[in-house]
Amino acid sequence: MSRETDEVREAIAGELRLMDPSVRVSQSLARQLLDPHFVEVGASGRRWTYEEMLAELPEMDGATKDGPRYEPSEMIGLILAPGLVHLTYETTFGGFRARRSSLWRKQSAGATWQMYYHQATPVPAEGR
Image 1 (cartoon, rainbow, N blue to C red):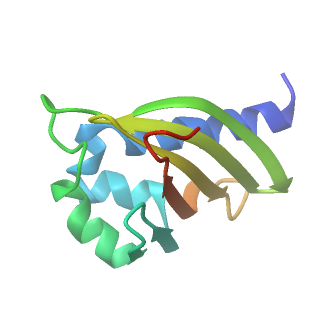
Image 2: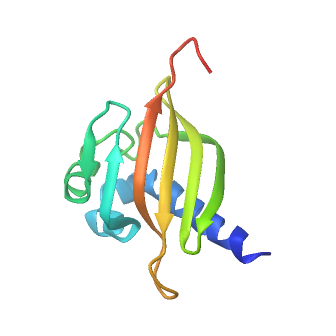
Image 3: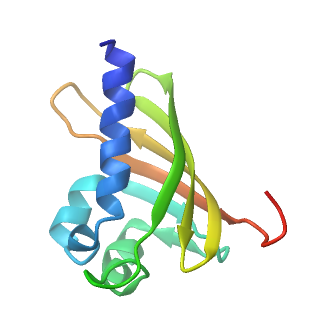
């Protein structure tokens, strides 16, 4: 298995953990996966900072254990530079589809992968 494959797999594992309701409701778990300089542009167009996301993530969609969950598909990753992985994929949540893009970075050899940037774009009901 190549180093690149390991890096992409680790970023994908982090992305999937952030969709897990038990992580979404735990600021300490979410903090491990979000880079302190994290920024998101959500499907609504709203810009989220690290602190805003940590504060509101427990109340956001997909945070209830028995409720609906994000269903990811077509997730692929590409190494942009050492310690920087770009993931793209689609999610479905309650009939709503979005195309997603995330940048994951690893600051040093012993560090964990953290999401640095995320963007979601709605997919029109009639489009692909």
